[in-house]
Image (cartoon, rainbow, N blue to C red; front, top):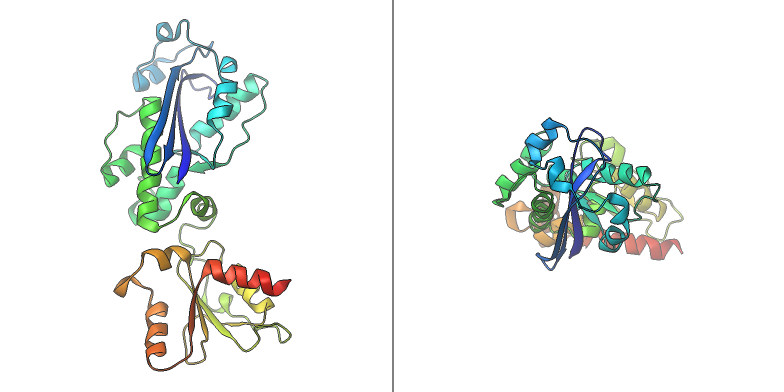
Length: 289
């Protein structure tokens, strides 16, 4: 799993006043490259900001300006995703590019705070600051140093991926879904009658676990190819579609109640096929051609 992490510090309340940048590249669970530089923001230093990160106007004398760094940053941002913790650093980059009359960086951004909120229940609605999450995962770092913060964001991604089984592509999809993907799915909202002309007409499908799409979207796809969609496993069920991360990490009693009931019915002789969401999506794609 490869990705790049970024953190910046600013001289004042103007997000374009970047005075320090830290970038780290992760591969195979480790930091494989790191880079840090002071930046001359050509702006005043507010004492509140100085009290947070300790960088003063005298410290950036002779340091490069942001326009002098954009080409290097563009090279460093190549890869599957650029990770920041909250939107602050991404917006700062956008504002600094605008001030420098430079196009914004063409990369995919991933917020490690949104990742943490979807991984650990205690951070779902509050307390998902960098320091709190790193304390949870047991990672020590020097806060408010750009490189240290960038590496900390990367370790959050590694810990969350270990916890959930999701890779970078999985997280890029997952953060666009609700924190609780089942919260908006009442029983009636995931019921569908299968299209009588669909190639899978006669199949009864149930969805369980964390999917990369909403339950409603999954139900709509299944119905188009003929499946009748029901919210719970019954003696009519013929297919159980399980979110990829649940297939990869769950075992025993950690499986959902739907998953366990399906296995019980299989053991009793009912013909139920359990498939991953990835295989379901591929099946739908093939059958729709």
